[in-house]
Length: 148
Image 1 (cartoon, helix red, strand yellow):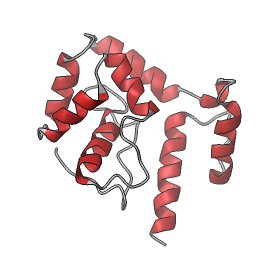
Image 2 (cartoon, helix red, strand yellow):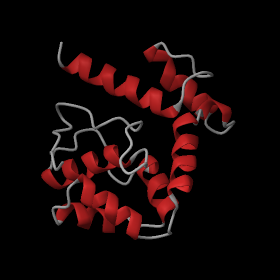
Image 3 (cartoon, helix red, strand yellow):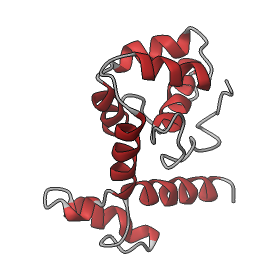
Image 4 (cartoon, helix red, strand yellow):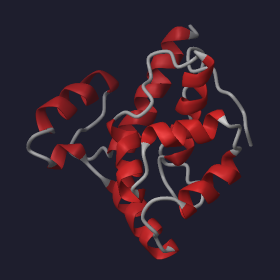
């Protein structure tokens, strides 16, 4: 799939969505394509979340962007991720993805106050909310308000 999402009108795919076993990758692809098309809106490519994926695999965000610019589709980008950077087994990818999916920023003393403030307007319990669930809720709230 090589679909361009206009992130001024709809959110990127959820960080929960897995491509090739990797969480975050589908969302990162959407943001990269939107960046190249000038349709990124309030989102940011190569943000800290994207960088957790890039760091895990040992790849550079700008090189990833070049691959997207060269027209690679989702499946080709999965192959590129698998073949680039630090080799990872499917088990390592699954373990990392599971850990990322379950991450709760509230459990990090340095992020606790910030995360609690982010959760408040969405009516989420920061102690129970994962980062990905907060992102999904924030995306939904942002675009629900835009499309009223």
